[in-house]
Image 1 (tube, rainbow, N blue to C red):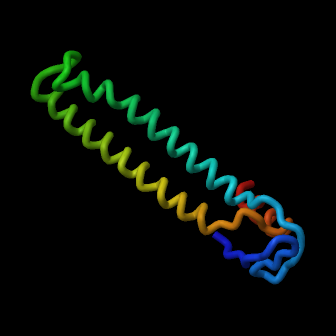
Image 2 (cartoon, rainbow, N blue to C red; image 1 turned 45 degrees about the vertical axis):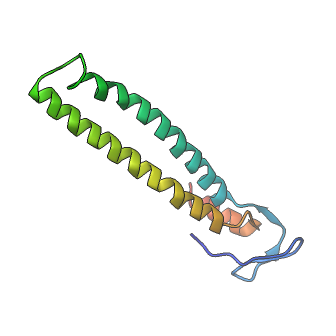
Length: 116
């Protein structure tokens, strides 16, 4: 992620020495969208996999030693996947905190070009 200088209200001097009006940082906007998407996906995935994990093995759909093995493996993978997703949210939040809300128009264009 590019480093930017800090400015005061009004004129802004970027890390590259550019001055000018500030606009919303597109990188920050994408990070905020990513955070919301991750949180939504965590809710959807935990709900999607909870029922099959409960029904198979120790449940009523498929029983027996093979079903119990499948159940243990599926439940472990479900927990691991959710833990990995949960670990991403703080990383994205850190990136959001370190990303300036406003950048110069030139910097915004450069940042936006990264997403094309």
